[in-house]
Amino acid sequence: MSGWVTIAGLGPGADALVTPEVTAALAEATDVVGYIPYVARVAPRDGLTLHATDNRVEVERASHALSMAAEGKRVVVVSSGDPGVFAMASAVFEAVENGEPTWRDLDIRVLPGISAMFAAAAQMGAPLGHDFCAINLSDNLKPWDLIEKRLRLASQAGFAMAFYNPRSKSRPHQFTRALEILREECGPNGLISFARAVSTPEQKIVTVTLGEATPEMADMRTVVIVGNPDTRRIGRYVYTPRRAE
Amino acid sequence: MSGWVTIAGLGPGADALVTPEVTAALAEATDVVGYIPYVARVAPRDGLTLHATDNRVEVERASHALSMAAEGKRVVVVSSGDPGVFAMASAVFEAVENGEPTWRDLDIRVLPGISAMFAAAAQMGAPLGHDFCAINLSDNLKPWDLIEKRLRLASQAGFAMAFYNPRSKSRPHQFTRALEILREECGPNGLISFARAVSTPEQKIVTVTLGEATPEMADMRTVVIVGNPDTRRIGRYVYTPRRAE
Image (cartoon, rainbow over all chains, first blue to last red; front, top):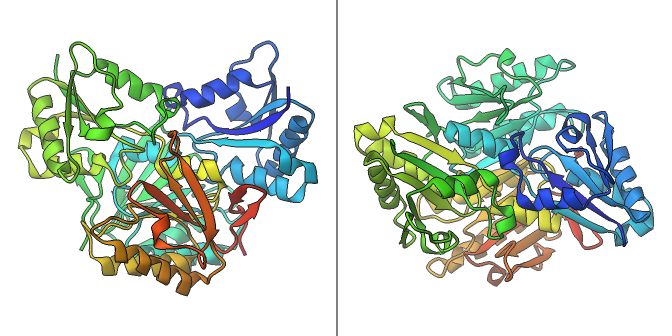
């Protein structure tokens, strides 16, 4: 049997959010590759080898998956959320572009998953119910100036916004700066929600105004959602109307 | 038993993309409410009443669902894709805000689904692998000028873009104008993909440059994805690198 690589989204954490398509791919795999906590979500079984690696080695991990597929193995690369959103799908194609020419002929598939931002939005109500954007706030792979520019342009466009990787120990000042920019552009009354560990037993969701928000409300397990000027609370829900002027 | 309303995302079309959480909610429902083709995806059974309505009556449909829940029924409002993305979740909260005060105390849940844009992106490779935005190109609920402004700001931000409702028979000229703006802002060499009926037997995906794109490539069943300046083809795949300068 010839090998393949499938990049599969496990969703944000709950088993009930894993699609049957992903479950079926895992059942056919000989090897599963991914970041340690995501591989830990795959049940061990005979005939399946689990390759759990540290974060920050995405392209090495992708190359390993492609090499094994070239040897005839059936490899699932696991991501949390959706693999196409700040996750392993782009890393695999980067590895294809820069790797062995024969890798371009491999059977590579991407299986979508429930993204952290949509799972978080669903728990809040419907804060992304109008035009929105998604920004990775980490400057590991792009300059911070570009992030600031995108925050300003997105605010001026009236987009709701979802932020991934808002804050890490190595760059705590940057999310402070992001909040300053949002207050400058959107004023203090806009709504901002912090959704941590969505769909897991540790889930915690807090919604405050931009004026009340503090950097400590976010960490690397948090997805942050900022409303547009029309976003409002109704009872315990936060939603953005479909209509805009 | 007390009633509830659950707004559930059925994903883009394939049964293998419906989450177990949504399947479980449908199994508990007494009533299913939604647009005709989405309700048609729910299997009839004893004890389940299917309420299929035309499009363009979202708030009436939402009010009907809330009324039935207030009477003790267990109501699932079905959306395709993710219900929080240009779909029924916001419409339900609009109906709550403007409807009976007692509706605010109802048990309302939103269950995320695989969005059309992420299912389309997965079929292409990883075109949304960097910062991106999602814009509804219909001017039913917002002025066209605002859409033009968002297209320009999103281009200037370097966002990849996903467009919903790109083109309808009643406003064929608007998508022509959107393509003009994208060519002005991004140049003729950027990649644009048209994904129709993703994950169904009628799926068709075409990728061309902005210079080659014509309005007829889109209709209301099409999700359009525009890359950022770094988006590229590698073999049969389209992907956007995680890195940016």
